Structures are given as C-alpha cells and as structure tokens.
Image 1: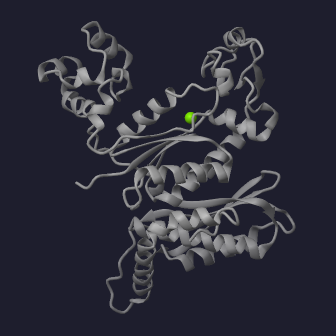
Image 2: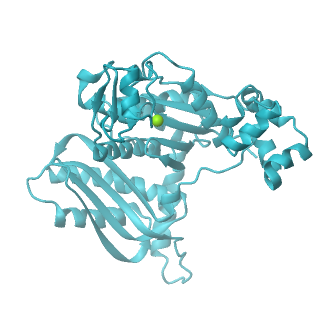
Length: 398
Ligand SMILES: [Mg+2]
C-alpha cells in the first residue's frame, strides 16, 4: 500500500476568531462567545487570551467570570460562522477531492496525490486559509486519520501562549508508534473514560504501554475489537477519508472580496465553478441530473434554485449552461451578490453509452477526462500558482 498523506485541519478558537475579525477591538483581550452568566449560560468558544485564565469551552459562564472577572461576553452569530466554515471547506476542496468535514471547524483531507512534502502542503494550506478568510488554523499531518488528528490535538495543546497556536505537527512515516507511545491512553480513538479508568487502575497510562499488552489482556478490555486497538496504539489506521456529502451532491462556491451585481462577472465565476464541479465529478466517476445554483446577496438572504436535466452529466459545459440559465432567470436585477455556488445533485455512475449510434456524450466525456489528466500533471503547479494569484483574485486558480 502506498504511503498516504492525510491532514487534519482544525480552526483555532473558531467562533472567537471570527468575532475578532468582525470586531478588531476584541483582538488579544480575554473574551468568549457564550451565554449569559444568569441561568444556565455556558461558554461556547473562549479567546486564547481568556484560555490563559483557565476559561474553557462548555464551562458555565458564571464560573468563567469568576476565573476571569474582566471576561467580555459576545453573543454568537452562527449564520456567519457557517458562512466562514463553508469558505474554509471550499479552500480544502481546492487541495483535494477527498475532504471529510468532521464538524463546523474540523476536516480531514487526503492529499496523497500531491507530490509536495506534507510540511509544504500544510504551510500552504494554513497560509491560504489565513489569507482568504483571516482565520488561524492548526494542521496535523501523518499517514493516517488517527495519527493526523492526535498529532494536531497534541500540537495545539502544547502551545499555551495566549495566542492562536497556528501549529503544524507532522508525524513522519514509520514514526507513528514512537510518536503515540508517551501520550495518554485517552488520546486514542476507542478508549473512553471508563476503559481509561480501568486501564489506569492496572498501571497502564500511556499508549505505548497499551501497545505492549498481550492478546488476552487486550481482549479483557476491548473484547473482539482488541486487534484494532492494538493497531491503533501502534499508529496503524487504514480508515479512508470519506467525503460523505459528495455522494448526494458535488458543489463548489466562492465568496467575493467585493459584492457584485455584474452579470458578466457572475457568469465568469459560474464558469469557473462549473469546471471545478465537473472535474470533481469525473474524478469520482459520478454524474448527476440536477444542476443547482446558490446565491447569497449582500444582505445575506440566500436562495438556491435547481433544474432537472434529461440525462446524467459531469461535463463542464452542460453544468455551466444550466447554471447560467438559472442565474439569468433568478438573479434580482441590481442586487449585489456576495457568494455564488454551483452544484450537481442526484448523482449516479454515468451510464456509459452502449449503443454505437450514440457516441456523442462518450466522446465529450473522454475528452474531458483526457483534459483532466493534463490538469493532474500540472497538479504539482496548482498549489504554487494558486498562492501567487490569490491576492489578485482568489477564484481564478486553475
Ligand atoms: Mg477548533
């Protein structure tokens, strides 16, 4: 099995970081997104300056205030968080078609196909997320999801500076077991608090100790899962990065630096997004017969509109034609747009034409796939070209 390159990206104090972008006077001061101290309010996301005082997520607000009397409370703006989250996930989609979003601020990315060293990919991804959204993030890189995630958590928790950690923690291939060995058993997936307590009572506190237990001992704690646990303790995890939503639909969207009501500009963006969606569909050998667009206006009202086709498609031109039709029909004249998206839904494997009398679609698809191969060959340039261009226009990347 070829060595995989898996990243785990986690935004640093996501909600608090968004609030700092919205109100720069919050930068560097102890504040938290959270509920009011009366009643059962809890802290959702403390700033790093507040964490220095011991303020933590899920802590009752009253307790947080007793630890940090100057703590400023900010009410959350969840609609905006989800918009930022979408933007970050769209950046990840530029790096790989294999992105598994774990939560609003966390995702796995399989970048095995990129030729660059993991460290370089992480630095590029981190700086792109920052330059395109203003948000700090930390990234773990390893040969598996398990080790990438544990590495990232470890890196983040070792940074206690009162500022966003912005950590990159890489575990080199072959060093997985060695990296995990000194860590607490609970860092491992599948070791809950109860099991951890039992293991500790027998003197087993680290992952390294867990890895050396005999089959009999492991069976006592993990039953039939014992072998999986031993593998994990050794840093062996074959689980794949699943882009689960993608079986239902593939979509891409972009938020503009400046809102625009210019139909030609919007069509250009649709063209770019349609190409990207088509490329991703062909990569997965999927096609769909519903094309949708998403428009978010400057006042944040958001609409999605869709159109059904008679055939399955994964061709850039067909996706674009339908999306353009939808845009012309539904765009409110004069109203500025801040985000535009294109999706293809209702996916299936494309029916390869069996009839020799209908070679048309096939030939178009073959041509598209041949072009994709060229794009893949240029793949090694994509990261670099993107970074040199994103200041000018973050959407024209390939
Ligand atoms: Mg986070």
